[in-house]
Picture 1 (tube, rainbow, N blue to C red):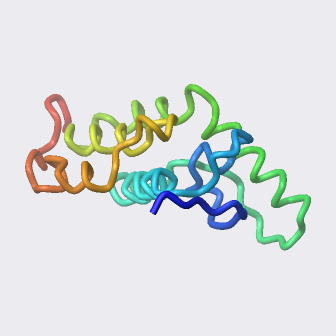
Picture 2 (spheres, helix red, strand yellow; picture 1 turned 90 degrees about the vertical axis):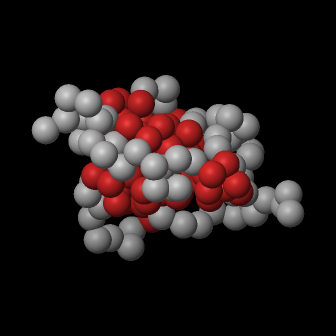
Picture 3 (tube, rainbow, N blue to C red; picture 1 turned 180 degrees about the horizontal axis):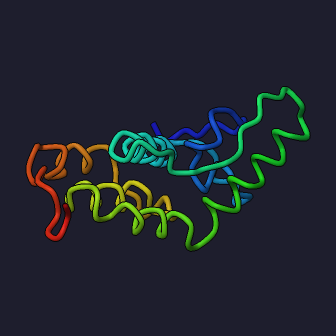
Length: 134
């Protein structure tokens, strides 16, 4: 426990800011919780959290361009917040709260796995549509 990988891997669209960025934090449990948030976003909305062009190319230059595009979106101060705002009327409020907690940019402020398991949305509470939704 408490160990971090320092090799790059995984899918760009599910990578946490600390994995894509240059702050040296690397992989760890907080990065896994970010990935969980990205998967949950996809499950709730039918859309990927991070939308990048994904041509089928083994070309390293293309992969680096995609990584840079994803890095700018995930590590930037507004992209994820704007994505959450865009879907906020389509998903239950407790689900939105869970997503916001899992997708916190700062890994120190990100929800832990234990906290996620205790979250009202995971516990089955508040699955109704938010007020004002159609």
